[in-house]
Image 1 (cartoon, rainbow, N blue to C red):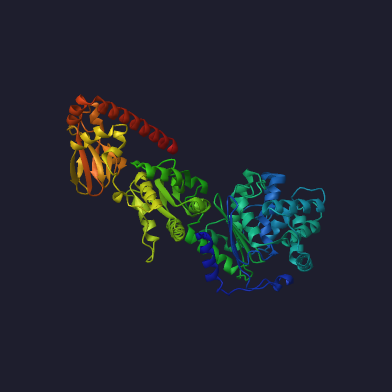
Image 2 (image 1 turned 135 degrees about the vertical axis):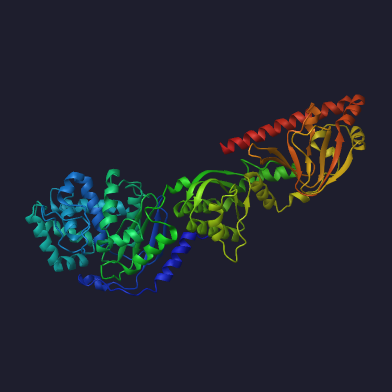
Length: 607
């Protein structure tokens, strides 16, 4: 099955590729050599899975996207207070190359404009400019997860044309913001902007910030935890220059753009996004990049102020139909089949509010299990809600797995419309809808039937009453006497055969055909099914132990035909042949022990 996330990104890329407005950056001559049609998108999860589309492997220079990561390095090296004394955190509302300095202190307003970034480059650890550059390069490489290099031609082009930035650097020196040689710090700034990356690199850098400063694949810490929120805060308020307010309002993710055509967006605790398309708007932001982020945010409900959580928390316990089989009592042949194949039925217990990132994680786990699975049961009992975008992905996964003959069904949604409605809206005209069961037992029984291609109500009856487990060990001659005292009775589908609390009338039922459910009452007035019985099984046998009232109800799930044996007749026959009563009680004890063992196994699977 193809990932719905991958399918979505491919469709998004195809739609936005027709957007051809914007111009290449020209104030750095080397940037005009880019192909204006380049366009890549990459999304990386917190456990390092990358979904890429388009020109995601095309390299380009990182430009201003380097700024938050060098700022992060300065925070890690010098601490919050010292860095704040040199560079502020207030939005300037001006263009990226504006000379925005505090009139009192001379400090740049924030580290995302050029003035602040030049100052930040001077603050990283290192006794010499060369050592500072090695620190910058090493730190950025840790965020990416691989060694980086500089595009020397772009670096030379920046250095040779960066007259305005040279003026800014000297102003910073004049106000005491840069302590050393300002041109050395400026050259390091030009180098950091000229680092070569691709779209996947940007997404991994963003995912590292989303993951609390730890790279999701290498596991290396790129930034101390206490500084992550500071970097993301500045990105949220200043990362898109004089478009920052509209960006936060419309898209709602901490972000940073670069005139090379890149944009990174971070959804803390969920995703990192990297986009590359070199056509820029008048503010210096990628036209296609902004459009892609707007649609991603809208379609996947990624706004930072929406409810969020750890994706892995959406999936709780995973177990199989071998751990928790249905409560039906299968015959010997079917039990053997279930013992061999029931592990192919997978239960997934879902938790909390299901957003896109949580559902993406769930789908990915289903993909991993798919080669050894025949059915998935999604237990929704502890789900508090689901977004429409997440429901859409989940239904796409259900349909994709269905095309591979793997069923996906839901259980324990009950009457919660806030879950049913998004799932229902996500279906389309060619989809027959999702299958939902009242409880896990009904769901796993359906999956068991599907596993073997059977309808439980049509299972063949045993050839004789002697095949019933209750009569194991009873001699053939005695069995003929038992069969002679049985009576046959039919029950229509839906009819209550026994009712909880009614007086026992001494009847024991042996199912010849059809299927029944054993139900016990719940305090809320409902019922819980505790067993499902088919041909060859029996119920009502507790009357042999002197039970005076029925402890459970029995309903016909289909048209049912039973052989009925009276305990009074059994007692009378046992007076002549005591072996009958002895065998019945021994078999009843064995049956109860087996049921207790299976119940213990079932409880352990759910614990």
